[in-house]
Length: 260
Image (cartoon, rainbow, N blue to C red; front, top):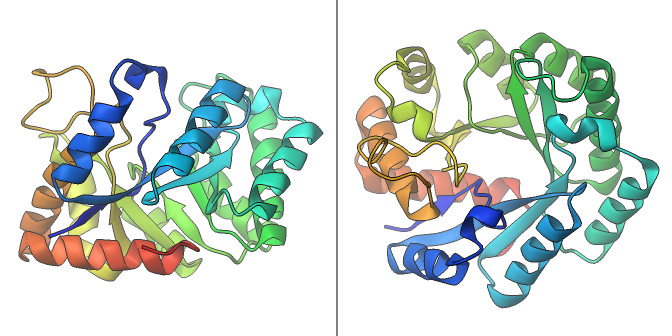
C-alpha cells in the first residue's frame, strides 16, 4: 500500500531541525508522495519548498497567498506565481481561500486576494487548493462569478454536506485531515460517508491536527500519520485501507499535473 499526503507544511519552521528525517520516515513508511504548499508572502517558506523539490522527486509544491496573509497580497506576488508556474515548479495555486473565523486579514482583503488568485490559476491552467472556514457561501459565489473551471481541492474539510456538493459540482475533490479521527467530528464523518471515494483525498496538514490516537501524546503532526486518516476513512467507507490508498492516490495523480 502506498499513500499520498496531499497537504503537508513540511517547509514549516516546525521541521527546521529534523526535516530530512521526517521526510525519510514518511517515505520508509509507505508514503509515496507529499504535496507542500508554499506561502508566497514568506520568502523563506517558499525557498525551503523549492529546495525540497530539487532534492525529492516525489515532493510536489503549490504556491499561493493564504487568507490569513491576504493583507500582504500585491502584484509582485502575481509575477512570482506566474514565474514558478512557467518553470513548472508548482502543480497548483494554493493554499488560498477565505477564513472568517480568525480574520487575520479583513474579509474584504481576503476576497480580493482569493478572487485574484482564482483568475491567475485559470490563466495558468492549474487547479487550486482552497482553505475555507466559516466562508462556504462566499467561496462558492467567488468560484461561480469568476468563472473558475480548473477544479481543485477543498482541503482540511470542516464544512457541511451542502457545501461539499457545491464544490463537487465545480470539479473539486474533498480532502480529509486528522480532524476526521476526532470524537467530536461526527458531522465531518457523516459527509465522508456520503462521498464517493473517487472524490476524496487524505492529508495531514502537518504540523497541525495530530490525528487520534496520537493527539495529546505528540505535539507535531507529520506526513507518516496520514495513514491514521486513511484508517478512519476506510472504516467510514467500509472498505479495506488498501482501497483508500489506491483510490486517493489515483485521485491525486489525476487532479494535479504531476508524474508519480
